[in-house]
Image 1: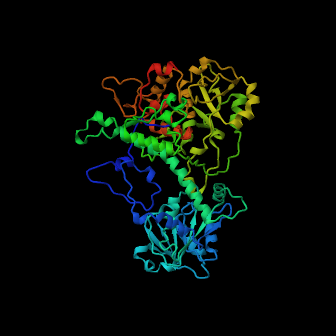
Image 2 (image 1 turned 90 degrees about the vertical axis):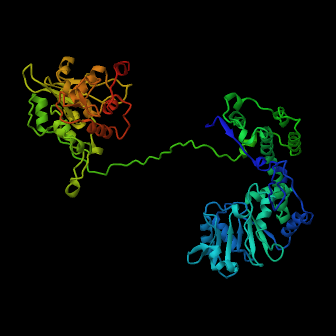
Image 3 (image 1 turned 90 degrees about the horizontal axis):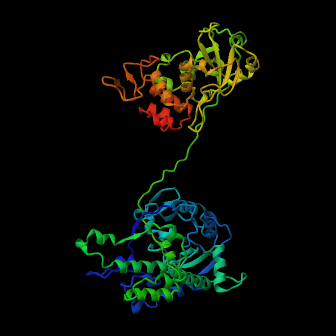
Length: 618
Protein backbone atom coordinates (compact mmCIF):
# COMPACT_ATOMS: atom_id res chain seq x y z
CA UNK A 1 0.00 0.00 0.00
CA UNK A 2 1.43 3.37 -1.03
CA UNK A 3 0.98 6.24 1.40
CA UNK A 4 2.51 9.64 1.92
CA UNK A 5 3.79 10.71 5.36
CA UNK A 6 1.41 13.67 5.57
CA UNK A 7 -1.63 15.13 3.89
CA UNK A 8 -3.07 18.63 3.67
CA UNK A 9 -6.86 18.80 3.75
CA UNK A 10 -9.48 21.42 2.98
CA UNK A 11 -13.26 21.19 2.90
CA UNK A 12 -16.46 23.16 2.61
CA UNK A 13 -15.94 24.26 6.19
CA UNK A 14 -13.04 26.43 4.99
CA UNK A 15 -15.15 27.99 2.23
CA UNK A 16 -18.01 28.67 4.61
CA UNK A 17 -15.89 30.23 7.35
CA UNK A 18 -17.10 33.54 8.76
CA UNK A 19 -15.34 36.36 6.89
CA UNK A 20 -15.57 40.12 6.50
CA UNK A 21 -17.46 39.66 3.25
CA UNK A 22 -20.07 36.89 3.35
CA UNK A 23 -20.06 33.93 0.96
CA UNK A 24 -23.42 33.25 -0.67
CA UNK A 25 -24.55 30.01 -2.26
CA UNK A 26 -27.73 28.71 -3.86
CA UNK A 27 -29.40 25.32 -3.85
CA UNK A 28 -32.69 24.38 -5.44
CA UNK A 29 -33.39 21.83 -2.69
CA UNK A 30 -32.67 21.75 1.01
CA UNK A 31 -32.15 18.02 1.55
CA UNK A 32 -28.42 18.52 2.16
CA UNK A 33 -28.76 21.27 4.75
CA UNK A 34 -27.70 18.90 7.53
CA UNK A 35 -24.19 18.54 6.09
CA UNK A 36 -23.53 22.24 5.59
CA UNK A 37 -20.81 23.80 7.80
CA UNK A 38 -22.19 25.11 11.08
CA UNK A 39 -21.19 28.63 10.10
CA UNK A 40 -23.56 28.50 7.12
CA UNK A 41 -27.12 29.57 7.82
CA UNK A 42 -29.82 28.22 5.53
CA UNK A 43 -32.32 30.95 4.63
CA UNK A 44 -35.80 29.57 4.00
CA UNK A 45 -38.08 31.99 2.24
CA UNK A 46 -41.68 31.66 3.42
CA UNK A 47 -42.81 32.04 -0.16
CA UNK A 48 -40.78 28.95 -1.12
CA UNK A 49 -41.63 26.66 1.81
CA UNK A 50 -44.18 24.79 -0.25
CA UNK A 51 -41.72 23.98 -3.09
CA UNK A 52 -40.69 20.51 -1.89
CA UNK A 53 -44.28 19.38 -1.47
CA UNK A 54 -45.30 20.95 -4.78
CA UNK A 55 -42.62 19.05 -6.72
CA UNK A 56 -43.70 15.77 -5.10
CA UNK A 57 -47.28 16.60 -6.03
CA UNK A 58 -46.20 17.09 -9.65
CA UNK A 59 -44.50 13.69 -9.63
CA UNK A 60 -47.58 11.99 -8.15
CA UNK A 61 -49.92 13.20 -10.90
CA UNK A 62 -51.74 10.57 -12.94
CA UNK A 63 -49.90 11.26 -16.21
CA UNK A 64 -46.65 10.06 -14.64
CA UNK A 65 -46.14 6.31 -14.55
CA UNK A 66 -43.64 3.49 -14.00
CA UNK A 67 -41.96 1.23 -16.57
CA UNK A 68 -40.29 -1.92 -15.24
CA UNK A 69 -37.19 -2.86 -17.19
CA UNK A 70 -36.33 -6.51 -17.88
CA UNK A 71 -33.16 -8.03 -16.46
CA UNK A 72 -29.87 -7.52 -18.34
CA UNK A 73 -31.02 -4.40 -20.14
CA UNK A 74 -28.14 -2.78 -22.02
CA UNK A 75 -28.03 0.74 -23.45
CA UNK A 76 -29.42 -0.10 -26.89
CA UNK A 77 -32.20 -2.22 -25.41
CA UNK A 78 -33.16 0.68 -23.12
CA UNK A 79 -33.34 3.01 -26.12
CA UNK A 80 -35.57 0.53 -27.95
CA UNK A 81 -37.88 0.29 -24.92
CA UNK A 82 -38.16 4.08 -24.72
CA UNK A 83 -38.82 4.34 -28.46
CA UNK A 84 -41.54 1.68 -28.29
CA UNK A 85 -43.54 3.36 -25.50
CA UNK A 86 -47.18 4.06 -26.31
CA UNK A 87 -46.91 7.73 -25.48
CA UNK A 88 -44.12 9.48 -27.43
CA UNK A 89 -41.06 9.86 -25.20
CA UNK A 90 -38.43 12.20 -26.57
CA UNK A 91 -36.29 12.90 -23.51
CA UNK A 92 -34.07 10.54 -21.52
CA UNK A 93 -32.81 11.74 -18.13
CA UNK A 94 -30.26 9.15 -17.00
CA UNK A 95 -30.37 10.01 -13.28
CA UNK A 96 -29.58 6.41 -12.34
CA UNK A 97 -26.55 6.11 -14.65
CA UNK A 98 -27.94 3.09 -16.47
CA UNK A 99 -26.21 3.90 -19.77
CA UNK A 100 -22.51 3.24 -19.25
CA UNK A 101 -21.27 1.34 -22.30
CA UNK A 102 -21.97 4.14 -24.80
CA UNK A 103 -20.68 7.70 -24.95
CA UNK A 104 -23.16 10.57 -25.14
CA UNK A 105 -22.54 10.90 -28.87
CA UNK A 106 -23.10 7.16 -29.39
CA UNK A 107 -26.36 7.32 -27.42
CA UNK A 108 -27.59 10.22 -29.55
CA UNK A 109 -26.52 8.47 -32.76
CA UNK A 110 -28.13 5.15 -31.80
CA UNK A 111 -31.36 6.69 -30.54
CA UNK A 112 -31.69 8.85 -33.63
CA UNK A 113 -31.28 5.76 -35.77
CA UNK A 114 -33.99 3.74 -34.06
CA UNK A 115 -36.29 6.61 -33.14
CA UNK A 116 -39.87 6.41 -34.35
CA UNK A 117 -42.06 8.32 -31.96
CA UNK A 118 -45.55 7.41 -33.10
CA UNK A 119 -44.37 7.21 -36.68
CA UNK A 120 -42.82 10.69 -36.74
CA UNK A 121 -39.04 10.59 -36.92
CA UNK A 122 -37.05 13.15 -34.97
CA UNK A 123 -34.73 15.29 -37.06
CA UNK A 124 -31.91 15.61 -34.52
CA UNK A 125 -30.71 14.58 -31.07
CA UNK A 126 -29.34 16.90 -28.38
CA UNK A 127 -26.55 15.78 -26.02
CA UNK A 128 -23.49 17.02 -24.12
CA UNK A 129 -20.22 16.40 -25.96
CA UNK A 130 -16.84 15.58 -24.38
CA UNK A 131 -16.15 19.31 -23.93
CA UNK A 132 -19.27 19.77 -21.78
CA UNK A 133 -21.01 21.66 -24.60
CA UNK A 134 -24.64 21.18 -25.58
CA UNK A 135 -24.48 19.77 -29.09
CA UNK A 136 -26.94 18.56 -31.68
CA UNK A 137 -26.59 15.64 -34.10
CA UNK A 138 -28.74 15.47 -37.22
CA UNK A 139 -29.62 12.53 -39.49
CA UNK A 140 -26.72 13.37 -41.80
CA UNK A 141 -24.23 12.80 -39.00
CA UNK A 142 -23.42 16.50 -38.70
CA UNK A 143 -22.62 17.68 -35.15
CA UNK A 144 -22.67 21.34 -34.12
CA UNK A 145 -23.16 23.40 -31.00
CA UNK A 146 -26.83 23.79 -30.12
CA UNK A 147 -26.40 27.50 -29.48
CA UNK A 148 -25.45 28.17 -33.12
CA UNK A 149 -27.67 25.50 -34.65
CA UNK A 150 -31.06 26.12 -36.31
CA UNK A 151 -32.44 23.43 -33.98
CA UNK A 152 -31.99 25.77 -30.99
CA UNK A 153 -35.33 27.33 -31.97
CA UNK A 154 -36.93 24.03 -32.95
CA UNK A 155 -36.47 21.77 -29.92
CA UNK A 156 -39.82 20.16 -30.76
CA UNK A 157 -38.08 18.32 -33.60
CA UNK A 158 -35.30 16.95 -31.39
CA UNK A 159 -34.63 14.08 -29.04
CA UNK A 160 -32.85 15.03 -25.80
CA UNK A 161 -30.41 12.87 -23.85
CA UNK A 162 -28.91 14.09 -20.56
CA UNK A 163 -26.38 11.85 -18.82
CA UNK A 164 -26.25 11.64 -15.02
CA UNK A 165 -23.75 14.49 -14.64
CA UNK A 166 -26.01 16.89 -16.56
CA UNK A 167 -29.38 16.02 -15.00
CA UNK A 168 -28.66 18.88 -12.59
CA UNK A 169 -28.24 22.49 -13.72
CA UNK A 170 -29.21 22.04 -17.39
CA UNK A 171 -31.98 24.33 -18.62
CA UNK A 172 -33.70 23.54 -21.92
CA UNK A 173 -37.04 25.04 -22.91
CA UNK A 174 -38.66 21.88 -24.20
CA UNK A 175 -42.16 21.86 -25.72
CA UNK A 176 -45.15 21.63 -23.40
CA UNK A 177 -46.19 18.18 -24.64
CA UNK A 178 -42.78 16.50 -24.15
CA UNK A 179 -42.50 13.32 -22.10
CA UNK A 180 -39.28 12.17 -20.41
CA UNK A 181 -37.96 8.76 -19.36
CA UNK A 182 -36.08 8.98 -16.05
CA UNK A 183 -33.82 6.07 -15.06
CA UNK A 184 -33.32 4.95 -11.47
CA UNK A 185 -30.11 3.53 -10.04
CA UNK A 186 -28.39 2.49 -6.83
CA UNK A 187 -28.08 5.10 -4.04
CA UNK A 188 -30.28 7.60 -5.90
CA UNK A 189 -31.44 10.24 -3.41
CA UNK A 190 -34.65 12.25 -3.55
CA UNK A 191 -32.64 15.38 -4.18
CA UNK A 192 -30.93 13.90 -7.26
CA UNK A 193 -34.20 12.40 -8.51
CA UNK A 194 -36.15 15.63 -8.15
CA UNK A 195 -33.38 17.68 -9.73
CA UNK A 196 -33.43 15.35 -12.75
CA UNK A 197 -37.20 15.43 -13.08
CA UNK A 198 -37.29 19.22 -12.89
CA UNK A 199 -35.28 19.46 -16.13
CA UNK A 200 -38.84 19.25 -17.43
CA UNK A 201 -39.65 22.84 -16.51
CA UNK A 202 -43.37 22.43 -17.30
CA UNK A 203 -43.80 19.23 -15.33
CA UNK A 204 -47.39 19.02 -14.14
CA UNK A 205 -48.44 21.59 -16.75
CA UNK A 206 -48.37 19.43 -19.84
CA UNK A 207 -45.03 17.67 -19.57
CA UNK A 208 -44.89 14.23 -17.94
CA UNK A 209 -42.47 11.54 -16.83
CA UNK A 210 -42.14 7.77 -17.01
CA UNK A 211 -39.78 6.19 -14.47
CA UNK A 212 -37.66 3.34 -15.89
CA UNK A 213 -36.82 0.98 -13.04
CA UNK A 214 -34.20 -1.78 -13.47
CA UNK A 215 -34.71 -5.14 -11.80
CA UNK A 216 -32.38 -4.61 -8.82
CA UNK A 217 -34.10 -1.31 -7.93
CA UNK A 218 -37.49 -2.99 -8.24
CA UNK A 219 -36.43 -5.42 -5.52
CA UNK A 220 -35.20 -2.61 -3.25
CA UNK A 221 -38.42 -0.62 -3.68
CA UNK A 222 -40.52 -3.65 -2.74
CA UNK A 223 -38.34 -4.26 0.32
CA UNK A 224 -38.56 -0.61 1.34
CA UNK A 225 -42.36 -0.50 1.04
CA UNK A 226 -42.84 -4.05 2.44
CA UNK A 227 -44.84 -5.06 -0.61
CA UNK A 228 -44.99 -8.51 -2.16
CA UNK A 229 -43.36 -9.31 -5.49
CA UNK A 230 -46.71 -9.58 -7.23
CA UNK A 231 -47.70 -6.03 -6.26
CA UNK A 232 -47.40 -3.31 -8.87
CA UNK A 233 -44.93 -0.55 -8.14
CA UNK A 234 -46.41 2.94 -8.15
CA UNK A 235 -44.79 6.36 -8.29
CA UNK A 236 -45.44 6.84 -4.57
CA UNK A 237 -43.47 3.65 -3.85
CA UNK A 238 -40.37 4.80 -5.69
CA UNK A 239 -40.56 8.21 -3.98
CA UNK A 240 -40.66 6.47 -0.60
CA UNK A 241 -37.59 4.47 -1.62
CA UNK A 242 -35.79 7.65 -2.77
CA UNK A 243 -36.50 9.32 0.58
CA UNK A 244 -35.14 6.25 2.39
CA UNK A 245 -32.01 6.40 0.22
CA UNK A 246 -31.66 10.08 1.17
CA UNK A 247 -31.56 9.19 4.87
CA UNK A 248 -29.08 6.38 4.21
CA UNK A 249 -26.89 8.76 2.20
CA UNK A 250 -27.05 11.31 5.02
CA UNK A 251 -25.89 8.69 7.53
CA UNK A 252 -22.99 7.84 5.21
CA UNK A 253 -21.99 11.50 4.86
CA UNK A 254 -22.26 12.57 8.50
CA UNK A 255 -18.95 10.87 9.58
CA UNK A 256 -17.07 12.75 6.84
CA UNK A 257 -18.86 15.98 7.76
CA UNK A 258 -17.93 15.48 11.42
CA UNK A 259 -14.28 14.70 10.63
CA UNK A 260 -14.03 17.81 8.44
CA UNK A 261 -15.68 19.92 11.12
CA UNK A 262 -13.30 18.65 13.81
CA UNK A 263 -10.32 19.33 11.54
CA UNK A 264 -11.57 22.86 10.83
CA UNK A 265 -12.08 23.65 14.50
CA UNK A 266 -8.56 22.42 15.30
CA UNK A 267 -6.93 24.47 12.56
CA UNK A 268 -8.97 27.65 12.34
CA UNK A 269 -6.78 29.56 14.80
CA UNK A 270 -3.46 28.41 13.29
CA UNK A 271 -3.51 30.60 10.21
CA UNK A 272 -2.39 34.17 10.81
CA UNK A 273 -2.08 35.51 7.30
CA UNK A 274 1.33 36.76 6.20
CA UNK A 275 2.62 36.40 9.76
CA UNK A 276 2.15 32.62 9.75
CA UNK A 277 5.45 30.87 10.50
CA UNK A 278 6.65 27.62 8.96
CA UNK A 279 6.06 25.80 12.24
CA UNK A 280 2.50 27.13 12.43
CA UNK A 281 1.90 26.10 8.82
CA UNK A 282 3.10 22.56 9.60
CA UNK A 283 0.27 22.30 12.12
CA UNK A 284 -2.11 21.98 9.16
CA UNK A 285 -0.48 18.71 8.09
CA UNK A 286 -2.15 15.49 9.15
CA UNK A 287 -0.51 12.11 9.39
CA UNK A 288 -1.53 9.80 6.55
CA UNK A 289 0.92 6.87 6.69
CA UNK A 290 -0.04 4.37 9.37
CA UNK A 291 2.09 1.92 11.27
CA UNK A 292 1.07 -1.74 11.44
CA UNK A 293 -0.19 -1.16 14.97
CA UNK A 294 -2.34 1.81 13.94
CA UNK A 295 -3.72 -0.07 10.97
CA UNK A 296 -4.60 -3.39 12.59
CA UNK A 297 -5.07 -2.78 16.32
CA UNK A 298 -8.62 -3.20 17.68
CA UNK A 299 -10.60 0.01 17.28
CA UNK A 300 -13.27 1.59 19.50
CA UNK A 301 -16.60 -0.05 18.97
CA UNK A 302 -18.69 3.12 19.05
CA UNK A 303 -18.55 6.78 18.10
CA UNK A 304 -18.27 8.11 21.64
CA UNK A 305 -15.00 6.22 22.17
CA UNK A 306 -13.59 7.53 18.88
CA UNK A 307 -14.48 11.11 19.86
CA UNK A 308 -13.30 10.86 23.43
CA UNK A 309 -10.35 13.20 22.82
CA UNK A 310 -12.43 15.90 21.14
CA UNK A 311 -12.64 19.27 22.91
CA UNK A 312 -16.21 19.34 24.24
CA UNK A 313 -15.71 22.82 25.67
CA UNK A 314 -16.01 24.06 22.07
CA UNK A 315 -19.68 24.73 21.27
CA UNK A 316 -19.20 23.76 17.62
CA UNK A 317 -17.70 20.41 18.62
CA UNK A 318 -20.68 19.78 20.90
CA UNK A 319 -23.06 20.53 18.02
CA UNK A 320 -21.14 18.13 15.77
CA UNK A 321 -21.35 15.37 18.38
CA UNK A 322 -25.08 15.98 18.84
CA UNK A 323 -25.76 15.71 15.12
CA UNK A 324 -23.73 12.50 14.90
CA UNK A 325 -25.89 10.99 17.64
CA UNK A 326 -29.08 12.21 15.93
CA UNK A 327 -28.11 10.43 12.72
CA UNK A 328 -26.78 7.36 14.56
CA UNK A 329 -23.32 7.67 13.01
CA UNK A 330 -21.43 4.77 14.57
CA UNK A 331 -17.89 5.15 13.24
CA UNK A 332 -15.49 7.69 11.75
CA UNK A 333 -13.51 5.01 9.91
CA UNK A 334 -15.66 5.44 6.80
CA UNK A 335 -14.92 9.17 6.60
CA UNK A 336 -11.73 8.73 4.58
CA UNK A 337 -13.61 6.52 2.11
CA UNK A 338 -15.74 9.53 1.08
CA UNK A 339 -12.83 11.95 0.71
CA UNK A 340 -11.94 13.43 -2.66
CA UNK A 341 -8.17 13.29 -2.89
CA UNK A 342 -5.65 15.04 -5.10
CA UNK A 343 -2.39 13.18 -4.65
CA UNK A 344 1.18 13.76 -5.72
CA UNK A 345 2.01 11.70 -8.77
CA UNK A 346 3.91 8.56 -7.92
CA UNK A 347 4.12 7.01 -11.37
CA UNK A 348 4.37 3.30 -11.98
CA UNK A 349 5.37 2.36 -15.48
CA UNK A 350 3.00 -0.24 -16.83
CA UNK A 351 4.56 -2.35 -19.51
CA UNK A 352 2.75 -4.57 -21.94
CA UNK A 353 5.28 -6.55 -23.91
CA UNK A 354 4.58 -7.47 -27.49
CA UNK A 355 6.62 -10.46 -28.57
CA UNK A 356 7.96 -10.00 -32.07
CA UNK A 357 8.51 -13.44 -33.52
CA UNK A 358 11.06 -14.00 -36.28
CA UNK A 359 9.71 -14.35 -39.78
CA UNK A 360 8.83 -17.95 -40.72
CA UNK A 361 11.67 -19.59 -42.64
CA UNK A 362 12.21 -23.03 -44.12
CA UNK A 363 14.65 -25.12 -42.08
CA UNK A 364 17.82 -26.42 -43.69
CA UNK A 365 18.25 -30.17 -43.94
CA UNK A 366 21.11 -31.55 -41.88
CA UNK A 367 24.15 -32.88 -43.72
CA UNK A 368 27.04 -34.88 -42.34
CA UNK A 369 30.10 -33.73 -44.27
CA UNK A 370 32.53 -36.51 -45.36
CA UNK A 371 35.55 -34.48 -44.17
CA UNK A 372 34.10 -34.39 -40.66
CA UNK A 373 33.57 -38.16 -40.72
CA UNK A 374 37.14 -38.64 -41.96
CA UNK A 375 38.38 -36.44 -39.09
CA UNK A 376 36.63 -38.64 -36.53
CA UNK A 377 37.65 -41.90 -38.17
CA UNK A 378 41.28 -41.18 -39.05
CA UNK A 379 42.12 -37.94 -37.28
CA UNK A 380 42.87 -36.29 -40.62
CA UNK A 381 42.12 -32.57 -40.41
CA UNK A 382 41.76 -30.72 -43.71
CA UNK A 383 42.13 -26.99 -43.04
CA UNK A 384 40.94 -26.11 -46.55
CA UNK A 385 37.75 -28.15 -46.37
CA UNK A 386 34.45 -26.29 -46.61
CA UNK A 387 33.20 -28.50 -43.79
CA UNK A 388 34.81 -26.11 -41.30
CA UNK A 389 34.31 -22.35 -40.94
CA UNK A 390 36.03 -19.88 -38.56
CA UNK A 391 33.41 -19.25 -35.87
CA UNK A 392 33.33 -15.46 -35.98
CA UNK A 393 33.35 -15.39 -39.80
CA UNK A 394 29.99 -17.16 -39.71
CA UNK A 395 28.44 -14.10 -38.03
CA UNK A 396 28.67 -11.90 -41.13
CA UNK A 397 24.91 -12.05 -41.67
CA UNK A 398 24.10 -10.75 -38.16
CA UNK A 399 23.12 -7.13 -37.51
CA UNK A 400 26.06 -6.73 -35.11
CA UNK A 401 28.57 -7.49 -37.88
CA UNK A 402 27.76 -4.17 -39.55
CA UNK A 403 29.72 -2.46 -36.77
CA UNK A 404 32.98 -4.40 -37.10
CA UNK A 405 35.26 -6.15 -39.59
CA UNK A 406 35.08 -9.80 -38.47
CA UNK A 407 38.23 -10.64 -40.44
CA UNK A 408 40.20 -9.19 -37.52
CA UNK A 409 39.19 -12.02 -35.17
CA UNK A 410 41.39 -15.14 -34.97
CA UNK A 411 40.39 -18.02 -37.21
CA UNK A 412 41.48 -20.98 -35.08
CA UNK A 413 38.09 -21.56 -33.37
CA UNK A 414 36.03 -23.44 -35.95
CA UNK A 415 32.47 -24.53 -36.46
CA UNK A 416 30.97 -27.00 -38.88
CA UNK A 417 28.94 -25.93 -41.87
CA UNK A 418 25.96 -27.83 -40.48
CA UNK A 419 26.13 -25.83 -37.24
CA UNK A 420 26.16 -22.58 -39.21
CA UNK A 421 23.21 -23.54 -41.44
CA UNK A 422 19.87 -23.31 -39.59
CA UNK A 423 17.41 -21.97 -42.18
CA UNK A 424 17.46 -21.63 -45.94
CA UNK A 425 18.63 -18.17 -46.92
CA UNK A 426 16.07 -16.18 -48.90
CA UNK A 427 16.81 -15.77 -52.57
CA UNK A 428 16.48 -12.72 -54.81
CA UNK A 429 15.70 -9.29 -53.38
CA UNK A 430 15.47 -10.46 -49.77
CA UNK A 431 18.91 -12.05 -49.72
CA UNK A 432 20.69 -8.71 -49.29
CA UNK A 433 18.54 -7.76 -46.32
CA UNK A 434 18.67 -11.16 -44.63
CA UNK A 435 19.67 -10.96 -40.95
CA UNK A 436 20.39 -14.18 -39.06
CA UNK A 437 19.96 -12.76 -35.52
CA UNK A 438 16.87 -14.85 -34.81
CA UNK A 439 18.33 -18.07 -36.20
CA UNK A 440 21.62 -18.49 -34.31
CA UNK A 441 22.15 -21.96 -32.90
CA UNK A 442 23.24 -22.24 -29.22
CA UNK A 443 26.66 -23.75 -28.54
CA UNK A 444 26.47 -27.18 -26.88
CA UNK A 445 28.90 -29.71 -28.40
CA UNK A 446 32.66 -29.17 -28.89
CA UNK A 447 35.04 -31.51 -30.72
CA UNK A 448 38.74 -31.24 -29.82
CA UNK A 449 41.41 -32.62 -32.16
CA UNK A 450 45.09 -32.12 -32.94
CA UNK A 451 46.07 -30.69 -36.31
CA UNK A 452 48.93 -33.18 -36.69
CA UNK A 453 50.39 -36.40 -35.33
CA UNK A 454 53.42 -34.78 -33.70
CA UNK A 455 53.34 -34.28 -29.90
CA UNK A 456 53.85 -30.54 -30.43
CA UNK A 457 50.93 -30.26 -32.86
CA UNK A 458 48.33 -27.59 -32.14
CA UNK A 459 44.95 -28.42 -30.73
CA UNK A 460 41.82 -27.26 -32.47
CA UNK A 461 38.29 -26.81 -31.08
CA UNK A 462 35.37 -27.36 -33.47
CA UNK A 463 31.74 -26.50 -32.63
CA UNK A 464 29.35 -29.27 -33.75
CA UNK A 465 25.62 -29.21 -34.31
CA UNK A 466 23.44 -31.50 -32.14
CA UNK A 467 22.70 -33.58 -35.26
CA UNK A 468 26.39 -34.19 -35.92
CA UNK A 469 27.06 -35.04 -32.29
CA UNK A 470 24.25 -37.58 -32.31
CA UNK A 471 25.39 -39.17 -35.58
CA UNK A 472 29.05 -39.41 -34.60
CA UNK A 473 28.97 -40.15 -30.87
CA UNK A 474 29.16 -43.91 -31.40
CA UNK A 475 32.37 -43.56 -33.43
CA UNK A 476 33.80 -40.96 -31.04
CA UNK A 477 33.35 -43.31 -28.05
CA UNK A 478 35.92 -45.68 -29.53
CA UNK A 479 38.17 -43.01 -31.00
CA UNK A 480 41.67 -42.31 -29.69
CA UNK A 481 42.05 -39.29 -31.93
CA UNK A 482 39.23 -36.87 -31.04
CA UNK A 483 37.22 -35.91 -27.95
CA UNK A 484 33.61 -34.76 -27.73
CA UNK A 485 32.85 -32.25 -24.94
CA UNK A 486 29.60 -30.95 -23.48
CA UNK A 487 29.61 -27.16 -23.11
CA UNK A 488 27.27 -24.33 -22.13
CA UNK A 489 27.93 -20.63 -21.43
CA UNK A 490 27.62 -19.51 -17.82
CA UNK A 491 24.22 -17.72 -17.72
CA UNK A 492 24.45 -16.45 -14.13
CA UNK A 493 26.71 -16.58 -11.10
CA UNK A 494 24.86 -19.46 -9.44
CA UNK A 495 26.13 -21.81 -12.18
CA UNK A 496 29.69 -23.02 -12.28
CA UNK A 497 31.72 -22.52 -15.48
CA UNK A 498 31.82 -25.33 -18.06
CA UNK A 499 34.61 -23.87 -20.20
CA UNK A 500 37.11 -26.34 -18.70
CA UNK A 501 35.39 -28.87 -21.02
CA UNK A 502 35.68 -31.65 -18.43
CA UNK A 503 32.02 -32.05 -17.42
CA UNK A 504 31.33 -34.75 -20.00
CA UNK A 505 34.03 -36.07 -22.33
CA UNK A 506 33.78 -38.92 -24.84
CA UNK A 507 36.65 -40.40 -26.88
CA UNK A 508 40.31 -39.50 -26.49
CA UNK A 509 41.49 -38.59 -23.01
CA UNK A 510 41.50 -34.84 -22.48
CA UNK A 511 43.58 -33.30 -19.68
CA UNK A 512 43.74 -29.82 -18.17
CA UNK A 513 47.26 -29.49 -19.57
CA UNK A 514 45.88 -29.76 -23.08
CA UNK A 515 43.37 -27.01 -22.30
CA UNK A 516 46.18 -24.61 -21.42
CA UNK A 517 47.50 -24.98 -24.97
CA UNK A 518 44.33 -23.55 -26.51
CA UNK A 519 43.42 -20.65 -24.18
CA UNK A 520 42.86 -18.30 -27.09
CA UNK A 521 40.21 -20.64 -28.46
CA UNK A 522 38.54 -20.95 -25.04
CA UNK A 523 38.29 -17.15 -24.78
CA UNK A 524 36.85 -17.04 -28.30
CA UNK A 525 34.43 -19.83 -27.42
CA UNK A 526 33.13 -17.97 -24.35
CA UNK A 527 32.63 -14.79 -26.36
CA UNK A 528 30.98 -16.63 -29.24
CA UNK A 529 28.60 -18.45 -26.87
CA UNK A 530 27.98 -15.21 -24.85
CA UNK A 531 29.35 -16.21 -21.45
CA UNK A 532 28.74 -13.25 -19.13
CA UNK A 533 30.71 -14.10 -15.97
CA UNK A 534 34.36 -14.77 -15.11
CA UNK A 535 35.53 -17.52 -12.80
CA UNK A 536 38.54 -15.53 -11.58
CA UNK A 537 40.22 -12.17 -11.86
CA UNK A 538 42.89 -13.83 -14.00
CA UNK A 539 40.22 -14.71 -16.59
CA UNK A 540 39.11 -11.08 -16.65
CA UNK A 541 42.68 -9.88 -17.26
CA UNK A 542 43.15 -12.59 -19.90
CA UNK A 543 40.08 -11.46 -21.86
CA UNK A 544 41.19 -7.82 -21.73
CA UNK A 545 44.66 -8.78 -22.96
CA UNK A 546 43.23 -10.63 -25.96
CA UNK A 547 40.78 -7.84 -26.86
CA UNK A 548 43.17 -4.98 -26.19
CA UNK A 549 41.05 -3.45 -23.42
CA UNK A 550 42.32 -1.78 -20.25
CA UNK A 551 41.84 -3.80 -17.05
CA UNK A 552 43.48 -1.31 -14.71
CA UNK A 553 44.04 2.42 -14.45
CA UNK A 554 46.10 3.48 -17.50
CA UNK A 555 49.74 4.27 -16.92
CA UNK A 556 51.25 7.62 -17.77
CA UNK A 557 51.26 8.20 -21.51
CA UNK A 558 48.83 5.36 -22.26
CA UNK A 559 45.80 6.44 -24.29
CA UNK A 560 42.36 4.88 -24.03
CA UNK A 561 39.17 5.28 -26.01
CA UNK A 562 35.96 5.97 -24.12
CA UNK A 563 35.05 2.26 -24.19
CA UNK A 564 38.43 1.22 -22.70
CA UNK A 565 40.15 0.17 -25.94
CA UNK A 566 43.90 0.82 -25.77
CA UNK A 567 45.36 3.10 -28.47
CA UNK A 568 47.47 2.17 -30.36
CA UNK A 569 46.16 -1.43 -30.50
CA UNK A 570 47.95 -3.58 -27.93
CA UNK A 571 45.85 -6.77 -27.73
CA UNK A 572 47.12 -10.30 -28.26
CA UNK A 573 44.69 -10.73 -31.17
CA UNK A 574 46.01 -7.51 -32.76
CA UNK A 575 42.57 -6.01 -33.32
CA UNK A 576 42.92 -2.73 -35.21
CA UNK A 577 39.72 -1.21 -33.88
CA UNK A 578 37.62 -1.53 -30.75
CA UNK A 579 35.37 -4.63 -30.76
CA UNK A 580 33.23 -3.27 -27.90
CA UNK A 581 30.28 -2.04 -29.95
CA UNK A 582 30.15 -5.27 -31.95
CA UNK A 583 30.31 -7.42 -28.81
CA UNK A 584 27.57 -5.41 -27.04
CA UNK A 585 25.21 -5.82 -29.99
CA UNK A 586 26.12 -9.47 -30.47
CA UNK A 587 25.62 -10.31 -26.78
CA UNK A 588 22.18 -8.69 -26.83
CA UNK A 589 21.32 -10.80 -29.85
CA UNK A 590 22.49 -13.97 -28.13
CA UNK A 591 20.66 -13.03 -24.88
CA UNK A 592 17.47 -12.09 -26.80
CA UNK A 593 17.67 -8.45 -25.75
CA UNK A 594 18.13 -9.09 -22.02
CA UNK A 595 19.94 -6.40 -20.06
CA UNK A 596 23.51 -7.42 -19.20
CA UNK A 597 24.90 -4.21 -17.68
CA UNK A 598 25.10 -5.80 -14.21
CA UNK A 599 27.13 -8.81 -15.40
CA UNK A 600 30.93 -9.04 -15.45
CA UNK A 601 31.16 -8.85 -19.23
CA UNK A 602 28.51 -6.13 -19.36
CA UNK A 603 30.55 -3.93 -17.03
CA UNK A 604 33.68 -4.50 -19.13
CA UNK A 605 31.87 -3.53 -22.34
CA UNK A 606 30.55 -0.39 -20.65
CA UNK A 607 34.13 0.73 -20.07
CA UNK A 608 34.27 -0.20 -16.39
CA UNK A 609 37.21 -1.67 -14.48
CA UNK A 610 36.52 -4.71 -12.30
CA UNK A 611 38.09 -5.09 -8.87
CA UNK A 612 39.55 -8.41 -7.85
CA UNK A 613 37.13 -8.66 -4.95
CA UNK A 614 34.16 -8.30 -7.33
CA UNK A 615 35.02 -11.59 -9.05
CA UNK A 616 36.99 -13.78 -6.66
CA UNK A 617 34.58 -13.19 -3.74
CA UNK A 618 31.74 -14.52 -5.85
